[in-house]
Length: 161
Image (cartoon, rainbow, N blue to C red; front, side, top):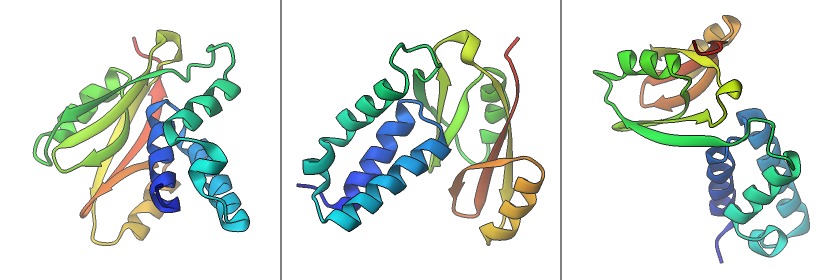
């Protein structure tokens, strides 16, 4: 039996990998967390395995599979030295950055071409995330990852050509 925190982390990953947007994912995780805190239930007993619950949630949100919620996901090898040009290429090819790690960029894009959009990425370096976050959000950027002092942001630019 896994603990609540581990369950929520696994569910969060499963929802993102299946293409649920960050806002809806955070909403679902919040609802599940509140339920577990109030009820005292074990997460697997209440909702089943995280991967299966994520699939069921998306099926309920998109019963006909037409909303563009089906994504392909990849991890692209990159380092702080070569990721900026790679991010520009990924954005032009409709890959949406979903996470960063030591030597990789996690990205996804809708399987259906008509659901794809191009992305612009920004990377800022700062010891404290708060001021950078406020500045970038004021300019229309959305945070999409952090690694040490690197803070990553994205914004949609349109449909791929």
